[in-house]
View 1 (cartoon, rainbow, N blue to C red):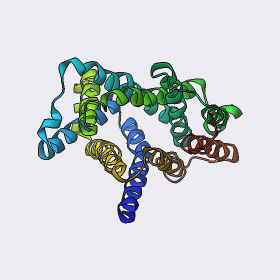
View 2 (cartoon, rainbow, N blue to C red):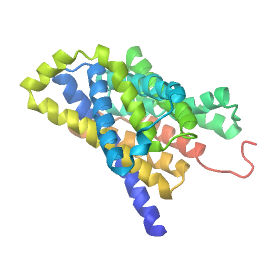
View 3 (cartoon, one colour):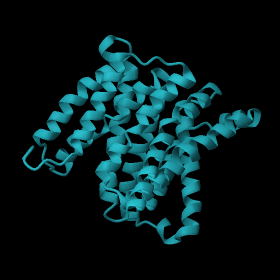
View 4 (cartoon, helix red, strand yellow):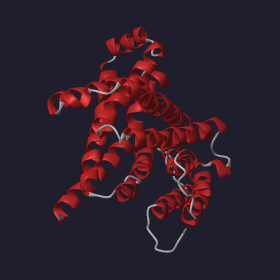
Length: 295
């Protein structure tokens, strides 16, 4: 059992690390001529195809959904994944990788508020304390507190956090009826279909035709930073609690910050480091169980 738990921890840490280097692929694709909509479409279509192929081999029954449940996947695919990815990729272009990633990880705070609104979950003193720690942490980590980030970058980063949080809301409903792999496949398929009219396929084909680098980085985005980490994270959850997994996943903004420093020469100062630490502390606090705290 201990070995299985250790393997699960390694899987989740690997998944979070692969999510953390996504900026390498998105920034390079942007430099090659793809816009944010097109990059999101690339990520969605490759993930949908790979997951579809995976399920054809593993269990074809997982590809089926009931038509009356389509609204759920419109929520996960359009309201969440499409909106979240567009906002996040724009934030990556407008600010540092560490700032964009940390703003994305305001999602647990939005999940708390949305859960209270839609599922009537209680907002405890523990949750409020986490929120109080997280908000100034976001200001510091993003650079907004020192005037080092633009308002559009901040709004895009927070928009990514809201979109990411929405996945938890719609996903919670979907999990009552479908397997995780079915949800991933349908979510990215709906996102790809929703983006198709706006992706300007002829322009994308032109870039792919004249630059093989575009193909390599597109496949990297779809496989290394999407399909593989989703599988690893899902398998990792089999032998570890979801709360612990979410804390482990906070390796992502740390990896994003390191990637930004090493690959793109970004600067990590004391305020940003303190902000990241505050966000980490808030999420850990949200996942610690106290006997008499917050009742």
